[in-house]
Length: 159
Image (tube, rainbow, N blue to C red):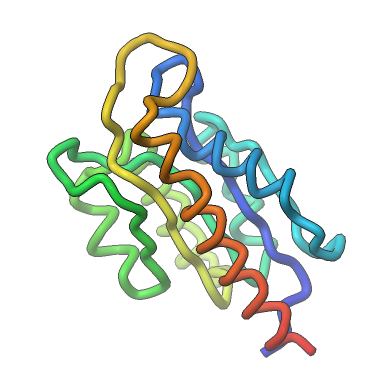
């Protein structure tokens, strides 16, 4: 498989505690990354449908996001390709309507990436507060490591 463009997108609102997980994970990924220029980091914040082009224009996509419900085990979850639709439709992410819509539109357009992965954690605190809880902060390195492993694999398939 040939992967020309890989987009890594961080979703979340930094003003609501652990809801900012996706953006924080993207920043850690960006700081620790020495990938070629074909790997793009996009701070998606809460832009929703406005991120559609980043999905449709790439060969592979990783999305970092905080996952809901709160009662899930606090660990890193990785969902890929066919696992995504069933997962997203359970309303676990505050961005999920935007994410579900984007994936649905990309499918309708026939422009889904060859590979797509959602990496996230269930939030602990969703109150108005800048910064992640300690418990969620401790999961950031594992989430970033998972993303690095995916990108490394995709890049090696491209060679």
